[in-house]
Image (cartoon, rainbow over all chains, first blue to last red; front, top):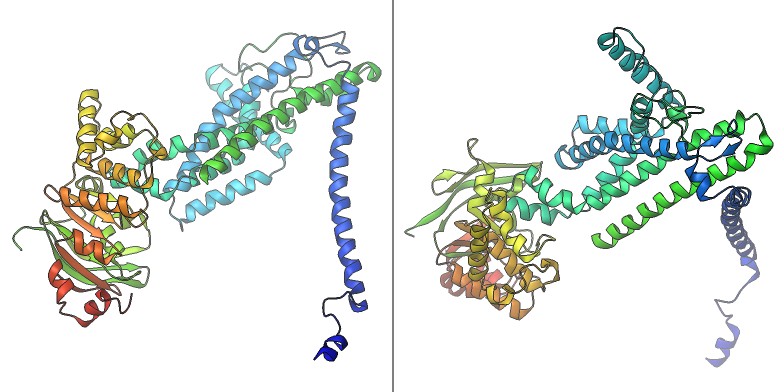
Amino acid sequence: MENTMDIIENPFSKSNNNKGKEIKEKAVIGITQIAVLLIIAILFVILGIIIYQGRDKFSWEFISSFPTDGMTKGGIFPALIGTFILVIVMSIAAVPFGTITAIYLTEYAHEKSKFAAAVRFSIRTLAVVPSIIFGLFGLGFFIQFMGKGMDSTFNGGELHWGQPNILWASLTMALLTLPVIIVSVEEALKTIPRELREASLALGATKWQTIKQVVFPGSISGIMTGTILAVSRGAGEVAPILFTGAAYYLATLPGSLSDQFMNLGYHVYIMSTQSSDVEKTMPIQFATTLVLLILTLSLNLVAVVIRSRIRRKAK
Amino acid sequence: MRDIKIQVNDLSLYYGEKKALKEISMQIPANKVTALIGPSGCGKSTFLRCINRMNDLIPSVKITGEMLVEGVDIYDKNVDVVNIRKKIGMVFQKSNPFPKSIYENVAYGPRINGLKDKTQLDEIVETSLRQAAIWDEFKDRLDDSALGLSGGQQQRLCIARTLAVSPDIILMDEPASALDPISTSKIEELVHQLKENYTIIIVTHNMQQAARTSDHTAFFYMGELIEMGKTNAIFTKPEKKQTEDYITGRFG
């Protein structure tokens, strides 16, 4: 017995047959590591450049004052305010609409309903439409059709609504963000366990009472997450408002929904392509980008925090 | 049986093509406890959920036959399911309090029925909690979240919540299966007290529980009602061989 034990080789030892496999394994690990590092590096380079180039200009004064001297000096106050108004009007339009759609899809639609399937397909398609298409749609539908129509019906053809303004830009942006809202609200509604719905129904509650009293209160933070994600997307997009309301420069803040507005993303675009003096506007450009980044990143951060809280609660 | 609360005639239930309940006919007496027993998947819970039309929530379900509650077929087109469920309360296997306070859990049913008067609500909450024998435990902490209670307390709160809409019939779907022995015995005691005023139908896996708590027992097997009778008769000398085999633990 002892002899045979000596002769048999250790079945687990590294043998030459496996050399090839080992090298492959190491190569795969190496490639994935390089890919990950590359992504992190890209992020840091982008952030680094923006912070480095924008840091001198970035100040409270920059945020709170109007541009001066043909936009080669001064701040970005009207662009910041314009962005705020845009996302607020957009949310007022998109959040209720999206929430109601999500309630229909999760609570009322039959599992095999063809109509619901069509709605879901539309939402998915809407989510992948390039944003410039939304811009063109907004120009064609809201401004040319709705706005012009309103003007000829109510204003005797005098141009008032039939031109780019905050309202049309916000509604265009609302369409773009609608899929984000619908999907996040749907997810939030689905986290409410069936047991709770049954408890409510078994007490003689109607479906709507159950949604109002049990499902909705339980998913309020999910709805907020969806809203915030939509807002942060809306704050960063430029293409949809290009033709529908964003202005190059305005000396005053917008006073009504039929006024044009300045916008952070659009301001960056203007600064980098239309500037009369690139040397002077370069720092403004970077500082504006920095403001926009801080705005969207912090919004996303809030959304992530709320979402992780929901996940913990769901468990 | 003098006082029939529920009369079931040839009730069958289909999940799509599959027939899960086969021509069930039975009579459930008023103000008694009726236990439904049988192995897993025998249809006892499905049957229970037919009584308050909880199966309506599953789109593929089709039901034939009659379910007469006090002589009215609850599957009739003119019957409002909401009124059925107010009259026929249900306690679930897994305790499912709302993520609200103890008070709000009990007040939920009366509130959705439109009761707003605070004094009346207070009264209903107190009576329901007393009936569920948890008033003394909870009276000083009515505003605490129901989610902080133990499993047994949650389940008794759910019973109080059911009582608050003053049903006639209470359906219990294995109400103690997730509880420890002490909580279980409290629930059983409660069932015993409640049958004075309510007709109770309880699904259970636990033979001793059926024997202890119920007046009548129905044995289900493979979607069929095999046998129903007085509990002590079923447990001492069942008429059918299958019932005897199940009760003595030869299968199931």
